Length: 364
Image (cartoon, rainbow, N blue to C red; front, side):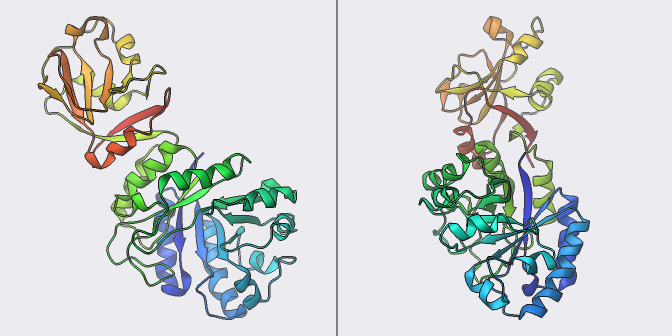
């Protein structure tokens, strides 16, 4: 099951702010924390004091805590890949290696007696994970996470992202990637504020749309909000999404009959296996409501990409079938346009596979 995560940067904000954010995020259903040691300049004992309190509170709220580090951080904190006990002492459940070792060390670390997860960088299309697997790690303690990219236009392209992710998926490893809040004046570990996504195409999209995209792809287990702090509205929108299937926003037409409204908002839909190039087809509503009179009430001449259609009874046995238009097409005069998916979500339509399930929610 996919999970929501957040990022915190204890050295960049007062502890009271960080603790309050943990409370807000937990209320929104977040269960994972990404916490960064890469930019921490304090010594070992200061890190122990700063991180222990926050991580303890995170655990009380039900979070899993993974600390981002690399071999340089190991050296500065006096930590060895053969002894990771310091990270457990400060309340970590795992460590993320932003830069790794040779593969052998990562494999050995997965057998650490503290039971820490070892998370490795997914954003390189190399045989790095294959090398680690060649050294026979404990796969129950090995996970992966993509990078985030503060500089505009520096994020991953979708095809490259998919190739990198597939390296990890074929071993059955848990995966993670970052989405970025669009709140003003956000911050993270680096002084760049162009957004903080993994995918470049996400940089300026609403947060909930980024999350919907990851859900629709089905290849990323943990979606982590990378920057601080998302707004209450953003958290509420993400919390309202079903995390086990894609959910489209829909702007409903005025005066929508009760049955059509229920078909859109209450039913579980799935795309037929014999897919059409022109629309997604959800046909179970025509079975459930067989015999119901679907009056013709809103049949514009042209059906536009993103329009949600429910066929009228003038279409015979198609009456009650729900469709989402993938392209512009001429209306036969028998099809009711009952709503529209906002343009910002149109690219998600191309992600829906044969038999894939989806729902609708009213647009925010």
